[in-house]
Every structure is written in C-alpha cells, then in structure tokens.
View 1 (cartoon, rainbow, N blue to C red):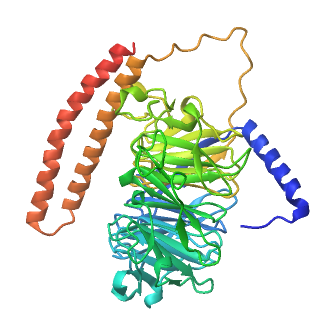
View 2: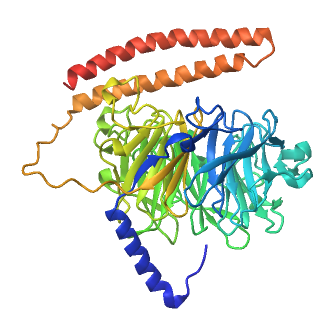
Length: 561
C-alpha cells in the first residue's frame, strides 16, 4: 500500500479512470502459452508440459511481491512447490519444493505441511505462511529474495500449533486450519480453521524475522462462542477461506458449511478483529441472525476485489450454486451490497439455485461454470477470471466500469481441458477453447502488470496464460444474420438436470480414482482390499449413473431441438 501526495491525488484518479477506459475498450482475452512452457506438471503430460516436483495435486497459488516466483501448495503430498518466473514474458520454470514427507527428489524437508491447503506471502516477500490442516498447524517459511527458495527454521519460530507440538510455537483457536492471509501492511497474520475448536487466530508479525506471536487474551482470536476469544457470529462456524480488503481495514471469513460470509473490522496498530453487527456484518443464503440475504450463495470459496472504475466491487465464488456474485463495496465500512437483478449473479444455468426451478432467470446464464472455486480480477480492472473444478477450466469475463460482469462471447469465454463444458454433455462440444493441465482447476492468480494469469489444477498442474486483446471486430455485414432463437425454459431445465447428473458422476469417478490410486501405496493387504472394493462399488454406481445421464442427454436433444 502507498499514499498519494495530496497535490497528485486528483491527477492519479483521473489517470486511473483513463487507463480503465482504455482497457475496457480493448476487452481482454486469455490464451494459454503454446508448447511445454504453457504448463508445469508432475509428469510433464507426455511432453506437453514441463516436468516439475511437488505438483501431484496443486491447489492454492501465490505470486511473490517482486514477481520473481509463483508458489503452489499440494495437499496430496504435503508440499509447497517453487517456480521461478520471468517477468519479461511471464514464463514459469520449476525451481524446487519443500515437503513434510520429502518424497520428492530435490525437495527440502519442512514441518507442519500435512495437507497444505493455503499459503500467503508477506508484502516484503521475506516469508511464506502455509495452512496445514492435516498437521493442524501453520508452517513459517523463510524466502530467499534472490532465488525464491524456501527454508524453515528448526526452532519453535518455524511453525505454530496448538499446544506447541512438534517443537512449534503455541497457538490458540487453531483446529484444522485451512486458510491464512497476511495484512497489506505486513503487521498481522490471520488463520482460519474449519474445526469446531477453531475460529480465526490473530497473530502479530515481527517484520524483521517473520515470527508470529499471539495475544494471550480475547484479542488473540475470534470464535463462535467467545470462549477465551472475541465473540463472533454463529455464521462463522467452519471458516475455510479468509480474504482481507486491499485497504487492510476489513477481514472477510467465508464459511461453506453455513453458506455465509462474516465481516470483521481490523484495528490499526494491534490488528485485533471486531465482528461487525448484523445485518451488514454477515451475508447468508437464507434468513438467519438478521443477516443480509443474497441470491446465488452456496458454499462460498473465494472473494476478489477491484476499485478500478466508478466504485469499489467484490466478487464471490459460489461453488455449490456454480455462480459468481457481484457486490458494491462500501469503502468506509467494508459492507457488501449485491447488485440488483441479474447484475448481481452469473451462474452456469441462469438459476440462482439449480435445485429450485423457480429461481431460473435470477442470474445471467454462463458457460462452463460448474464448481466455481476461485476468482481473480486483473489489477487494471478490465477482466475477471475464475476456475471451475467440475468444468475443468477457467472462465473469462469482461468487467465494465460499474463493476458488472459479462462473459466473453463464444469460445473466448472459457478454456477447458477438452473444449467441452463437460465431455459427458455432448451438446457442449466447442463451447470453450482447448487447454492443458486444467483437470479439477482450483486456483487462479494474475500478475501485477495485468499481462499474465496462472491457474492450478488438482489433477493437472500449473497452467500459464497470456492476457491479450481480442482481434478487431469484423466489418459490418450488409444485413445482419438472424440470431439464434431464445432458449426455452424447458430446454434450460433439461440441461440443468443433465448437468447435475454429470457433476455427480464426475465427483464419483474422481473419488473412485483417488481410492484406487491410494490402494497402490498402502502396505496393508487388508486396507488395500477395502480400498479396491470401495472403488469397485463406486464404479458400479457410476455405470448406473451413466445410464441416467444418457437418458437425460436424450431428453436435452428432444426438448431443445
């Protein structure tokens, strides 16, 4: 963060508006880098990508403040991968990893990385903090500013855990930690836990060493009951994602288990959190605790901000509703107000809730948005990108000056592993561009210069994209051809039913694959037999489900003809 000299404030604002206007007229597009430099995976995908380490199941992503490195967590192999980044062309190269199990050649050993699910880099670039739910703690890693390599202190300053286990510093309100953020001023680190004994842990950060310390009183944490912590709202139970506003004044806690977002004011100096009162202090999908009710909210996963344009905006990834919600953000209080009508929601089917027929038309209809997991706005404010776990890709939106979103037309609006929205839905062939290393896409980040974007995928790897302007529009034809006929409500309903079955089938197939893969590693024959039998039962269920899907697709062909 920086402060503008008063004499230049108006000029800076005017320049920002001009830059945004120029960017908006040349709406961005996304193109995966050609050849092996377009992705990094554990196996190189038969030469289609670069061969890396610590990338069996990459999830969370972060770019270092100096732009020299990208880091990714791997929940499957308890590791953090380091990739070097060429700031001139955005190319990534594998550059090592740290792992709790040290199963990788070239990986350094580190503690408290079990199930590494999230990471955050300090603004000075000196430290990386990792949330590790399976280790039930936080790893504190030191970053070399020269080559970006990560190391960990062997003392208690190398990690934080309840009771100080494994030689770590003791921490409170940590129970299955899944998320971590660093304040923009670098003075605090906040950790969110989804376990019942957790909440939000508040740490002060030593700017010289990166060490964390926690207040022994109520200011050291927030939880639902206020037990030895600041008293929070019931809607904060099961926190899985924390996001902090760019001004550092408001912390947002996303709780998928409650379909809720709760807001906390951050005190300057101490960094202590104060829950904001309802109705502005909490956002929910159904009336509860006098909170603000919004449409399209179901299992919130990520929140992104932009202040470029006519005001401040926030964008929420809603996984279970396959949607992105658009809000106006109050810069003074941090409160979020969903934009009215369809401007407040884009979803995979146009439903705000695919399970409720009466919600059709409450959202704008999007493409390849099945399982929205993560969102990122380009720093220049011109575009938003979101990863889709079930559609195996990334979706591309233009962002207008008032913050509203419009998906890029045609196949420019999405890039998926196959070019389908879903290969089990034949009528979606060609809806998207083809991509690589996008199976179960999870995270997305953008470079500070708005020229590059990167995604992680739990069954793919790390994919690299160029942000490029679209080609100029063709000259106007003498007579515009008639547009496609409007899609009927019956057709949209039939498609939604097929999409729901396809999603369940994909989840089941991937779970079967995980069990079969795990069976190859276990040493106990009894455990191996149990896993294989479970996978076989799942395959039988999948065959029945595939029959249902064929019938649903035939219905789509009939109703939508």
